Picture 1 (tube, rainbow, N blue to C red):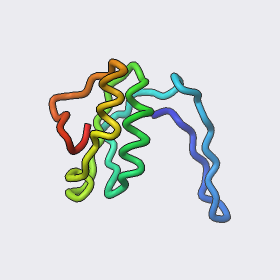
Picture 2: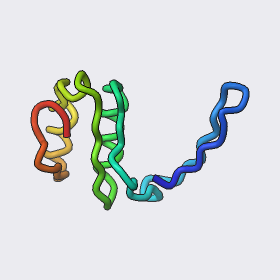
Picture 3: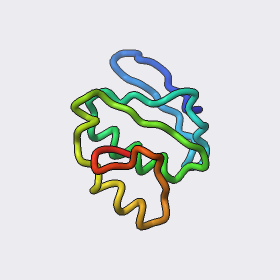
Length: 89
């Protein structure tokens, strides 16, 4: 998504920020594994972008409720793809 990440070196990463609108469209879907925190944070962050993104996760993540995140975003005018359900965006 256009973010430069250096490392790991001595157990550390250096992430060079690009600002809110400096991100670029991902080349493929973003697999968040079993990370509900990542799903919720990335949903909010990516909803503010001009490009489309697809977030996926494992079976467990895909069965978790996401309405706490999606409903406020919908009320602010965001749109989601055809898979908008109570589970994930």
